[in-house]
Length: 192
Image 1 (tube, rainbow, N blue to C red):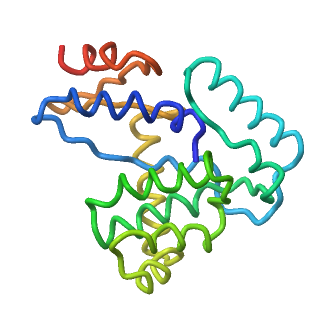
Image 2: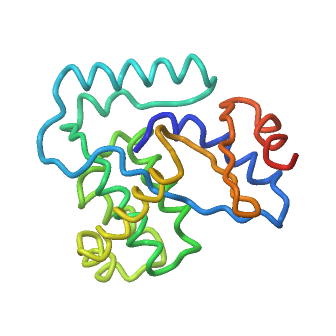
Image 3: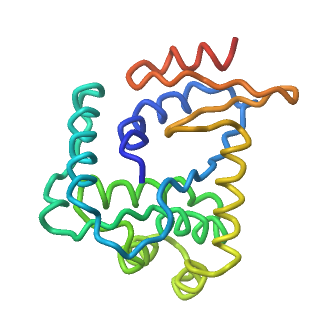
């Protein structure tokens, strides 16, 4: 659950609409924060909230529900949300993006805790998934290994921050510079 990814979401959707059909998009989950049951320390809470404010300054019209910090017990763990995306994709790859959107909206707009399995299961239940299978898959070794494979792939692509865009063309890799507000600047890097 990367706040900058949330801020980039609207621009990314515009970029996708402008992409030629010949370009396939593949999502790689970076992981960011491994499993933990520890409550986020105050310094980290302040850091994340300051980041939210910075994002709102840099990316106009980005919304955050600051009630999250009053209503939830924040846990610094993004692996559960990543595994939820994988568990969803296992059943229906076409719902991967919808699951990502639901998790982001739950966290950033609805002040729901994306590090809790119960939140993730509730979100998955709104999709056309076998919820019992989703619940089982959420914390299996297979799902965890798929997440670790993604984090390994991200490292092998020299991805050090999120969001990141990498273009693979003719076996060469090109990192695309992120512009949070101007989709055409991103498109120009991709199609030239």
